[in-house]
Image 1 (tube, rainbow, N blue to C red):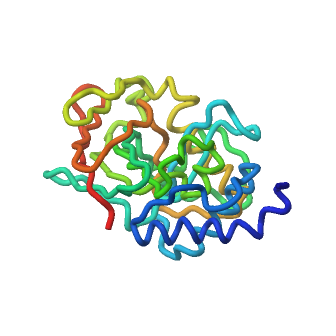
Image 2 (spheres, rainbow, N blue to C red):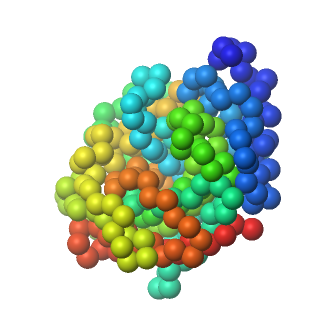
Length: 265
């Protein structure tokens, strides 16, 4: 199916995903023809955002490897209702029990001043100028479609980028001078290490993710707002989780953010 012929299917696919999420039920197959391009996948995402109708509190950015349609990253909305601040006791983050679920250690960037309307290209330094805080974080990736990550980035994009939550950890007070790209980062599931890496190994790092997002949303005509978050990419990888798991992301040795995994209802 040509991308130009895909629009009539975008709304039907979006409706299937949005209602499966609302009802916390799984999908045993992709609900239609797979988007033939990333642009077509973002058509589905736009339709799903409109159908969801609630406030976007940020955006997740993920890696595409190998690149597709000239892009090595993708993005999806994070709704305010799914953004939770860390507490003394690990917060319970919901996932779809019949679908896909994973946890990711990420640097979270807060937008201080939105990019100006009409600006379509950014350097990393220009993107950084719009960030006013960086926090530790965990992205909870979950979709009603269990095979979402096996079907390619267009499918991931079409279901909100496979996002279902964000845990906001403590702020990094000295982030502008702390060289966070070089920090060791690890993610543990039930106390066992699932992955370890440094953000410098992830394309052009967290602020490159901000640059990508600003350019993508300018192209899509979607404005950003002060206070919105950017979940900048899985530093140690995408780690499958199950209900009842305890997740711990460690940054720079002693900085930690935690959550538990619960069933969506």
